[in-house]
Amino acid sequence: MIKKRKKNLSTEVYALGQHICMSAHKARRGIDQIRRRSYEESLMILELMPYRACYPIFKLVYSAAANASHNMSLNEANLVISKAEVNEGTAVKRLKPRARGRSYLIKRPTCHITIVLKDISLYKEFEEYIVYSKKSGLITKKKNKNLTCHDTYSSGGLWDKK
Image (cartoon, rainbow, N blue to C red; front, top):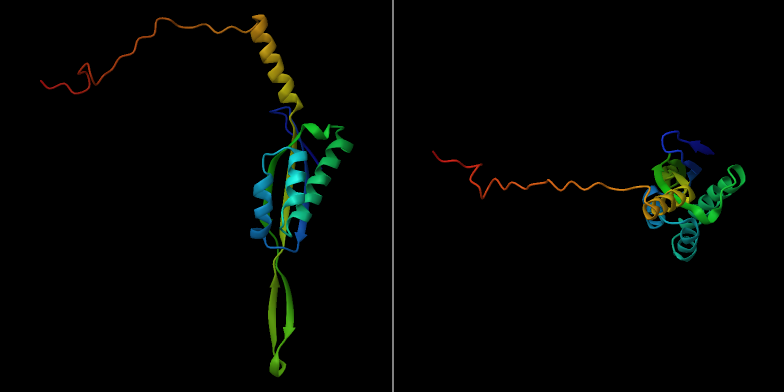
């Protein structure tokens, strides 16, 4: 899926995994480690973490990067995870047979995971342009030398006793 915003002129690519059989609390442990990191760094982190939640998150990050490279022809080295969120899904309900013909309800929680990748090459080009323009003198800052600082506490202007 591709999402374009006209305000920033930035392109966001995302992957959505729904109904993953895992509680949202356990999935957030892995998501919190990769938020705002680069694509390659997040893949290394997810491979080395010992949690069961890391494998579906790994697949989603990989899928989002594949969407970016295939649909938008973006370079994977310039991708950063701008947004990663986990929401609770519906609980899958199962009945377990118990003694005396009774049954016991088992709830298996599910979650929805969203990974949003952003291309930062545009920001790098913008920063390089700013640095170049400052060096060449295209951008100059005018300093106001007529600034005066008034201290109201020492001058007695705030607490006048008459």
